[in-house]
Length: 196
Image (tube, rainbow, N blue to C red):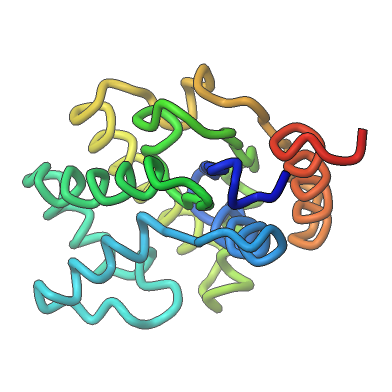
């Protein structure tokens, strides 16, 4: 049975700087699936609104946090993006890099990457070249605002409610390569039912 005939849907979620986007892109490439990111779709929306959302680490910048505040005031931003992501989930053969799809999509294999706030801040310092103090502040603010948005919109508690997930991977001490190896094995065995 080929991947295409199975209409595979994989949802990856986790808090800021947990490595979900890297893992999702690698899985999509490995299994020849479409990669679709809620974050990229929101950035495209931000660009249309005049934000300078192209640079790496933009979400954690002052301007990115300002966009988060604007999103909190207008739920239509997120609802538009989530409607598009749900359409991709219905089509299948996709890896969804999204905070909301594990709760909103009715189908799919759902993965949460668990990493402490301290470790995520440390990763952010390496990725974006900011101080650890600034990284901790950004992680706390971004996580807090994002939680508020989704709890208000959909009623779930991001980072607290793990009920939709098929797999929770503690990737605190794993490299991105290690995470990819583990998730590739899981997808191959549990999603594609290969290698038994």
